[in-house]
Length: 241
View 1: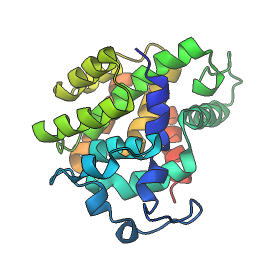
View 2: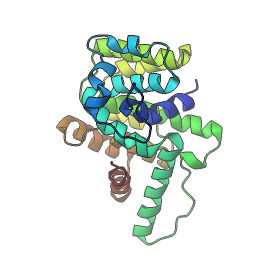
View 3: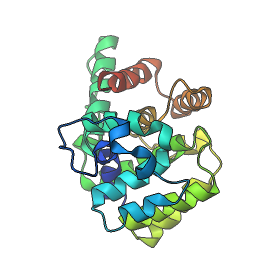
């Protein structure tokens, strides 16, 4: 199963979510009204699939991420993604958080953090699957993903990658009850745990009590030190548009 390329597309898809399909320049940052997010993410009316039929990979990834997020989160995530970039950028942010945390402790690190941006391809794949698992769980944290939306999400992911193994895995993740402990078990290294938490912070709305509670429990299950948790959250705040 190859999740690296898929995850990279999803993390970059905020650019497509915010760009006007009529031809706004990538440099412009249009409003949600000018993009017409209601029609772009027409999950409730079934309009998404038709609009994105035959579209490029970026638009398809935007459609998949848009459904995963739900309309209320699209603008928030899209603005962040314009700054974040893709998968490697997530590793850079995690690495920065580690550096700041270690500096605060006043001790030099024993070993350099092995974040996404510093790994061999095989290890990046392992990290990517864990992060995608975290993204799917975070998207479910507010309870918006019902049975119909799960079907729509799976349909959009099939357009991006029709690998049967990946589709079976995604189906299982979407249909699982939300369980922070299960998500945390995917983290086999401290760096992976940090990246999973960072990706989750990107998606959740901390003003929503259910999502905030989920995020707190995920951090506990990932066994993140309080200082590192705070630094990961700070990295997200620093790049908010």
